[in-house]
Amino acid sequence: MIEDLQQLSLSGPEIETKPFRFRCHTGVSCFLTCCRQVELRLFPYDVLRLKEHLLLGSTEFLEQHTRLGVGAHPFFPAVMLNMKASEGHPCPFLAASGCSVYHARPSACRTYPLERAVEKTSNNGNLQSRYFLTQHSYCQGHQEEHFYTVKLWEREQRLTEHNLFNDLWAEVDAFFATNPWQSEGKAGPLQQLAFMVCYNIDVFRAYTRQHNLLAGFRLERDRRRRIEQDDSELLKFGFDWLLHVLGNRRTLNPR
Ligand code: SF4
Ligand code: SF4
Image (cartoon, rainbow, N blue to C red):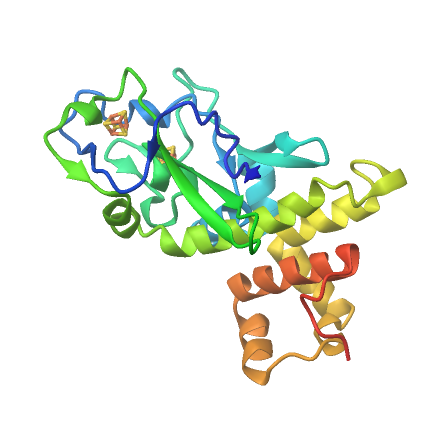
């Protein structure tokens, strides 16, 4: 089963251990071409990192920079980054010198020219990732005399943290694909609650306080402290909580 993390076409060749030829730098004739008119899907951790970097609230970020799109399945929407309306439809974070949110750039930007999919192995159910190489005709990076392996690319683009969160999200999104909303249908109260947990972390934090959510579960003291202080940890807790309350999974231990 391939769980589509990035609405991948998966049309390019799969890359595993063999090196691929690529280098992107300010000297390429296509510099920043790929940051225009992009259908850029944001995952929950992307939104969290971007809104922190931009010092925006999560509601503000979603309202200013995103729209809903078609998800990987009919039961949960995708969150898409809005391009600017000006000529060439550049990314709102594109500056003359390059990406102005480089350290918080989304997973898709970090991963390019690779695309990543995860699949659940049939024997033990663990997630396994696969990378595919995309080759757009305008991208001159493929002509450069420089070679990467996937491992080197992951390290250079600091993909580990993003991949970790995206794998957790893939589990949650695969669960959403089972239509846990049932007769309530899409965009009903349960789906809206799930959307808030995954994408609107400030509102979810207020919700956890209002409903004293953490008190209902046995959490190690250190984990509870991290959840209370760190939005990334709160997002992980939110994923566990959704799988527990909507899917009856044993991701959390109730008191
Ligand atoms: S099109 Fe390719 S080489 Fe050109 S800037 Fe984008 S990623 Fe780099
Ligand atoms: S976030 Fe940065 S790297 Fe990604 S499309 Fe926008 S400007 Fe380009």
